[in-house]
Image (cartoon, one colour):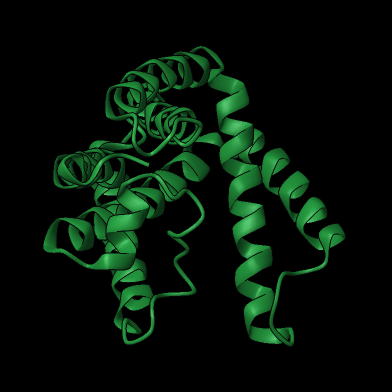
Amino acid sequence: MLPHSYQVPAALLLVLGGAVSCFAGYRLFKIVLGIYGFILGAMLASSMMAASNTVGMVVAAVVGGLIGALVLMFAYFVGIALVGAGLGALVAHVGWSYVGSGGDPPPIAVIVLSLAGAIAAMLLQRYVIIVATAFGGAWTMIVGGLAAAGERVAARAASADVWIPYPMAPAPGQTWVPIAWVILGLIGTAVQLGVTGRKT
């Protein structure tokens, strides 16, 4: 978790990184992997430091972010499989939220759909990358935008509470968020299919 004074710059970086992912994720996939690797690494590393140790948290965030970025950038094919697995897990959670009685989906459903997503990602790399980066970038832009605007739940997400940003479970009174996420994700997908992600 980053100190309060770093939350707005972190939120603006989320918006910028999300925009790159949403509208040019396929063309810049290795860079997008680096951005998300940095975000994940920074979140995990900074969460291991005491909240009162500002310098330690910032150093841990930078070092963890660089390690995370390098890991995902060099693990290109693993990254593609992880994107597919993540999409499969998202489908399991979204589907369960509509048909289940609340809570998390059964672990076997998450495992099966994650494996199916990873296999599909390897077979249909271009389309999986486009859809995943468009929707992942759209969600990152929304979380970053809300955090920059002062939304408390999103600000906690931007300051490294990695489990808060979940598209289909918005904060109370924020029912517009999933709709905005889907619309922005579809726009990003269309832009990539038609402009930035076209085969040359």
